[in-house]
Image (cartoon, rainbow, N blue to C red; front, top):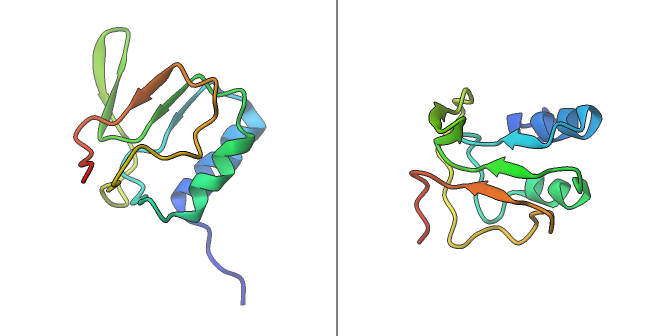
Length: 95
């Protein structure tokens, strides 16, 4: 039986292929313990990541098109690539 991939995993794998410098993982239901976050360590091409409900593009808010579930973290994830210049965590609770 094949396990179904999460939306976050699909988005990360697609981003690895396209090398888009921005990745929207908002509203993907991620938590501190989500295994998908480990996939980000190989994404050295990324310059920006959205882990919130929205991010800014050309100084205007853009709401995440993902709608799985809200994201909850206790801290900023440590699996983020070192070269990230923009990290959006808007409306994401940090406990």
